[in-house]
Length: 238
Ligand SMILES: NC(=O)c1ccno1
Image (cartoon, rainbow, N blue to C red; front, side, top):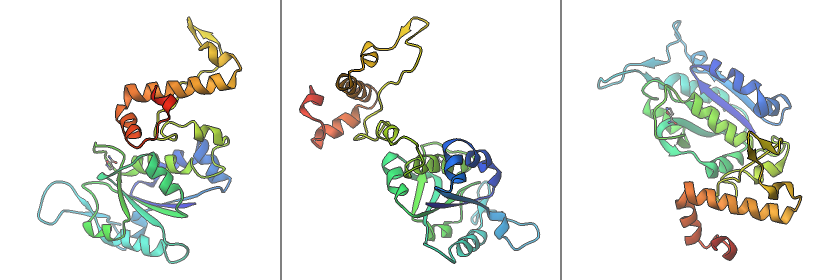
């Protein structure tokens, strides 16, 4: 997968693209992520990327020209990207969308900033995406959240596919089960006996029960939804 990011603050991505699982995936060539400074696509000596809103009002709006120039330049060759725009009022990002996006060969993420982008930029956009009902200073952090959730799903990026299976939200949207590691007792808190038993069937059913219990406690609507769709087994319903 290739991802092109358009932003006025490219430096925000430096650590994200160098460290951890994502950094390794890029350095090993499993995925390609290129961050582009929208200012590099301006033509004036002050490299202006924003302007006051028509009709008045607070703040500044990202101008269309530099973004369109960037899009034209970056899409001259190769597959046309699926274009996302990160904005607070976009479609809510979730695991389902992450899975869908992970199947695209190429993405472009335009990071909103200031009061937003000129509305005409949206003629380039396939999906406006929000990571939550709150307003940030810009779309760069949402872009990193989206890239993290999407890139980890690319085959070969996560060493152990098992951890993908055990993800929260990956099994019918159920929350993940509790995890423990050594020591077996820490400050009087013991690891559940079943996890020390080596009995894989019992461990699996304990984990399933914990996952259902946690989902029922924290996200009952997910259980109700699965019940309505008939996606819970008889045992799980007991
Ligand atoms: N909530 C968001 O995704 C967002 C994007 C830009 N500002 O806020």
